[in-house]
Image (cartoon, rainbow, N blue to C red; front, side, top):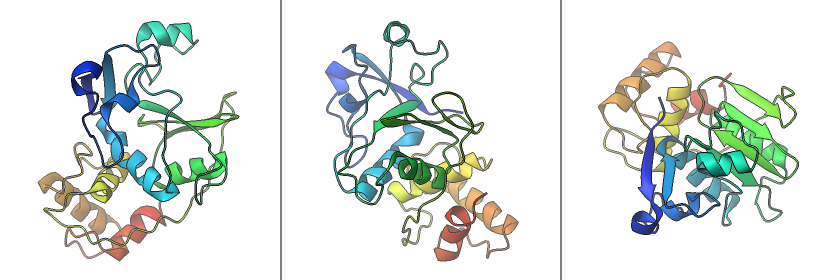
Length: 218
């Protein structure tokens, strides 16, 4: 289930959602006051920003139904639901030196909705895998090494907690929403994941759990 919240640009525009992103950056390109944002992708885009080490902007985030129709978007577009981002490829991105590597980054994090376009990539928080090009041809995206070194446990509160929550959610664990707070549901889901993967089920995300989550994910 998506974790979409509705904001007002005039009232909430400057509200910080993560270290580097605030509400107004997800505004529909028609300037509408209403903004819908799926909080589940916030830890993903924040980690992307940290990884490329430069500012990140969106070609398209939330779209009102009227604007979506104007630009030829699908009626059921994830943009209208506040669940999608179109991220342009920039030569200034560190490490991710192509659109394919950008896709690999989000694939590594477990994102199931990835579409590669000639100058940007589309990512969304759908729960059924769809990796393709803009012509609908199936694509296989690789992976990149993302250095996860923090030890996370109950009470932790940071972007990497959100990454773990999102990845577990995409793997089918009932972790709730990616709120970046390591609470009881997160701990229980981590323990279940550890048990299912032959790890010590201590509910702590150490290096062995990181490796299973992100290096060996199928």
